[in-house]
Image 1 (cartoon, rainbow, N blue to C red):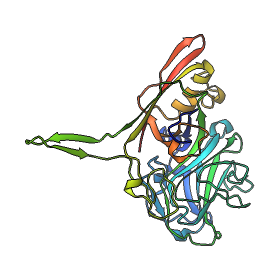
Image 2 (image 1 turned 180 degrees about the vertical axis):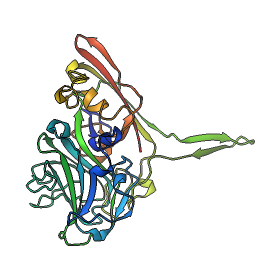
Image 3 (image 1 turned 180 degrees about the horizontal axis):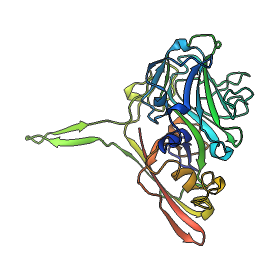
Image 4 (image 1 turned 45 degrees about the vertical axis):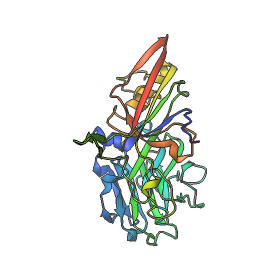
Length: 348
């Protein structure tokens, strides 16, 4: 949509970084193997874990002669409700330069012998840069930059995630360029119940600059940064089909902030049935803002992918954000009715 036209917001909450942060998952839960299922992927720079640090500018480089390879994550959840997922995002990639296609599978079988491919046409929604390639169930990003797909929440057969990368010409082909990947996000979508109230505040903070005056009164500026670091082949959050299209004049500088108020939310939209419930549906998998959003980002600890309009396919409506304050605050305005504020700030 663009034009900062805020509708009903949507957050994409990463399950992998959440599980790594509180200790449920470890590096051993993430593997990167070539097509023989045993040979490790060769990294020219970076390592597996750097693809899951939520820092898209910190990209890894995977050698082009790995040919077909896959990245697999084991949630170690034996309960389907705990391992639910509904989106995948790959940030800061050059898959167009590499002529790479991707296949996405989620299943309880670690070998994915009979798994249904989420990447198959009809099984997912292409949101950003995720054109379906062919009947083989592949997604072929048309440009470098980033890719986002969503799908109906996978409520069964969902312990393992596998993302397979292959050269478009076939699994035995070298990629046309070394593959670059900044961040991989995988988890569940959180939709707010309705649009925020009028009176939204949006600011762009050009922080990181201090001013000094000389003895003669001249003003000098010293800046630690102008905005988020550039990506490997594009400006941050841009899409481009040409290599090294990260020209400085094409970037948006500054830090974006949104402050909005959601009024008259029912208590079931805001709070879980039982915050200490042992039943998954009463807490961890309960469908409310506190448990599905604030709990999963651990307050300000973890960033999240956010869009001002959950239906938008415009890349400028998306970005990585954190909470601008450390707490979750709600105000009761009527019986079982609450107002909740959301203040977020862009992060990198």
